[in-house]
Image (cartoon, rainbow, N blue to C red; front, side, top):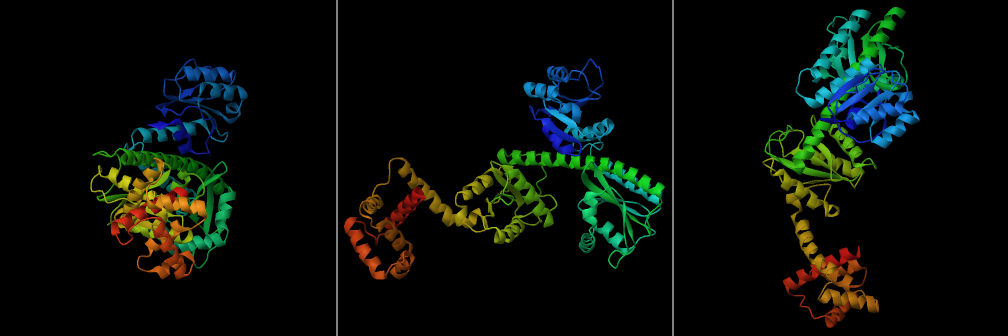
Length: 513
């Protein structure tokens, strides 16, 4: 199932704008409401009000009474005060359809999104149909212009290409084989201002031949409203005749719809994968609805905020980072306010050693970035323990390295657990024993016996280093320790007493912080 809010996000801002959020409920189907229609669909339907006019407030009330999960109107109608006021009162999501988008096109897009959500493996809903359409469109454009064609998205990834490869060059062949434009060509196009022009213009333009490019290219931008989605690239010698350019613009409009559908389906799949990952991490089952690969796995927390914004945006940045490092199917999601990744122990690119390298590289530029991984999990059920391990490391992350596995942090964790137990005494009424007496003396007389004892115990058998930590002379340290032992009777030569003192000192320090 997919919610109305997810539908709007998946289709994208080039088509939809959520005017009134309302209550987000699952969408079961799409219902076309013709002007004057008596029926407004069944409960769970998303109502598309074609040619809506008259009393918009009554239309909203009727949709709400019928159990609709949302109402789609043209922009002017959706922003009408009567419609928005009624939608807010009834908690009904109100969606504005961009004026440039035809109703037939939006129905096609919505069917693709809802079908993908209802049955991700269904051939009619899968990406294969869209990709086949793209290859067919590339062949059609090649026939119109009598030139080889490639279809690219706005990241210079090749989505399809025409079957005729007679008149081509090495640059085109390497682009097709690599499924994306080679880096040297991308740099060449960026220097020529090609991407700036694609992002701002609707008009086809010619890129001259060059040492890296080979033969000239005609580039046709593909846009949906103000949004640049991709482009058509044709190997030509000169700009075609006006009639051909007109047909190419029409083809670009058709291609825009295909790219919107492809993006919408990818967004639905991404959201479904994220929800399945959350389910596995929160309630591990024996049969997860997610391809995890071969065990063992690790649950890793990615701390710090690379975006400086919200955790959902941080997830997007981490996913983009993983893809830049060649990860094909990275698993990362926001969980309990933290970015959580699921990685293999070893053997594949999406593994803990690879994540460690990525984070250590990022940590050099931003010391706040860390990866904290739980112990390996050999079964799906064991992922719960790995997640608990990772969250336990979160409490001591400032004492750990850039990328730390649970089994490597045992000294810090052991101390943390022991100190946490001692901290309970503080909350229960205060510490008892020598440390409490020294604290009282320091507060009453302005002495520094607590910090002196802490430095002395931290440097066993090395009073000079302890004195350096305190920025005092070693004789001053020795004098303080003599006075200290006169105030409290504690055998500092006993290991058990020394350990107990250190735990109480650490707990007291945390309480002060």
